[in-house]
Length: 427
Ligand code: SF4
View 1 (cartoon, rainbow, N blue to C red):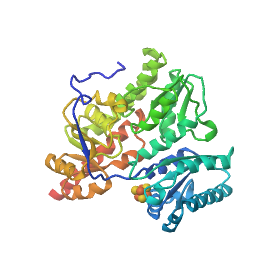
View 2 (cartoon, rainbow, N blue to C red):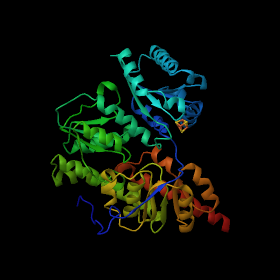
View 3 (spheres, helix red, strand yellow):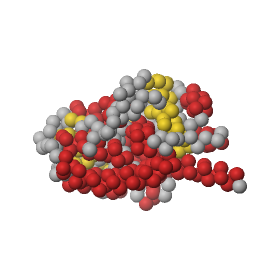
View 4 (tube, rainbow, N blue to C red):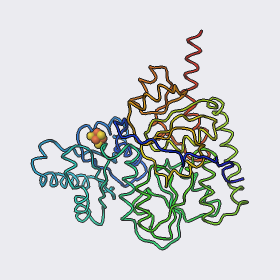
């Protein structure tokens, strides 16, 4: 049986969405540079920002900033406000200095940020001007990682979306996998699909600019992350077509994601089962081990990464958890609709955030596990709630069969730790 076993009659797709538009507590889109710079080996991310942006990047990236210098910050001082022409000249000089020093750079991203002096700079125009100046060796693109416009996973979306308009045209029928995953996880997906006879398979982002995928109406694409809404819209505008599916988390999600692609490429059931049977069995076994801790426990998601809905689907259906609230920064049913179809109606589905009201709901519900950002976790722990940092779920490899057990274990760990602490306190 390759398809999800039971689709609930009443699902979360039909449930009313509680829309919140208040204060929110999340990282900005600059954070995405930390994982993007590892994927694109000839790219450089130049943040046009303030000292705060430089500090964020340095503390988030830690020592890697010295080991793999593929990003940096061009700091605009107050004085640069004196004249925008001066600011543009300064940026041009910074870029020229950087490119002269680093001939390995083939793609340069100018990444916008929050300070008002940066917002006034037209980085799109700067990118066009600099592309002409440094062609054909370097292409310069721009996107915003500003905390005003983006939450932390949206930085990747904005980056990938900026690349789509300049992808070369192709008439070839190709499968494009979209999203930046650790190489070892991406390789697992490509291997499974290739063993079914599916190909050619391309990925966005490609490791080097020379390997960028082609784009056209015969390209079909599958998203690897649920936060890539702008990228999907940009791909659609170039004529590509999305293969809609639940996201590849857990045994069920991975199987449904693979099955949707296999259907698109006419793979028969026998081939599909032959390729997936062994890793599916391994995934089920690994999930079952962690699910012993999770079964029957309640969970509350604060909005953070847009991964909340697929994760909730996995925890409810494969680990036996009960969701009280599933909060997401944005709910794009065109992307997460297939996951919502698999979640029985019941939990509150909330979009956006009004953090104080949501904290009140969380305190009233007293969930066994709360998934939230770093800023909320400590106070909630102090109140006796068990928490999981949402950002850890983005930085850990959790896609596909071989990581399904790790994904469940990430949620089980804080519950086990809390149980141990209680035990020690009782002794
Ligand atoms: S982009 Fe904005 S939110 Fe992010 S570090 Fe810079 S100033 Fe802070």
